[in-house]
Amino acid sequence: IQGLPNDIYSLIDSIKTAKDLCDALEKQMRGFEYAEQDRKAAILYEYVTFKVIEGEQLLDTYLRYLQVINDLKKCGYKKDNYELNYKFLNNLQLEWKQHESEESDDKDISDLKKITTLLAKAFNQRKFYSKPTNNNLKTSSTSQFANKKQEFVKSDDKKVEKKNDEKKQDMSKVKCYNCKKEGHFSKDCKKAKVK
Image 1 (tube, rainbow, N blue to C red):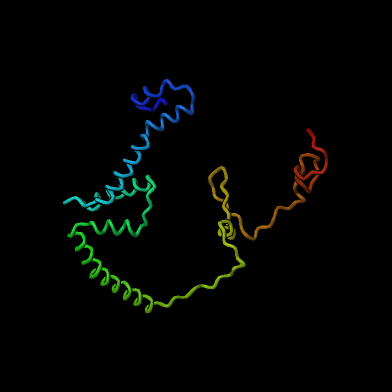
Image 2 (cartoon, rainbow, N blue to C red):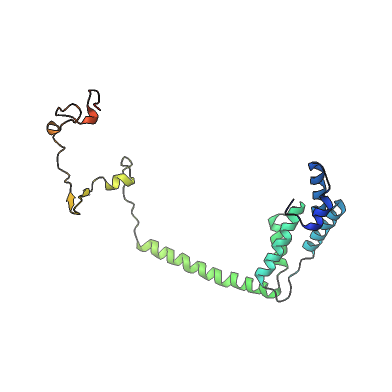
């Protein structure tokens, strides 16, 4: 209610129930039934008598026509796109009609011929081969880096490369900090943890 104009708010501020308030607000914002019919008739008349203004840019004409079409749809009138497009093109100024027909006939056909000849030449000059693919191999971001050597950086900023053929750590030399025995880590220890 706070966003209403003052003149409308002053007409509905004394209404007590929400239903009556909504009904009164709808009447004020949309008008009565006769005003609605007048609005529909005015929009239909604007559509029927739509003409291009002398010297108006094509984009401005189209935007004005689009506004009329949107108003028609809001009022419930349904026109198919063919009829709407035909009416717009039929109302174009004579200079736009001539410009459109000259360009579309000569330029479009010559451009199309040029494009098709270039495509034919390019296709005939090159032989297109497709590389055989193995569907069993999965390509993902991890598999691209799986075969590369990993680099580790020490605290003294020297790079140490891990060799691909380097063997795993000898587990017999590993000592458990939990049970003090060799051969496993403390996280793998089977004895109860000492605190």
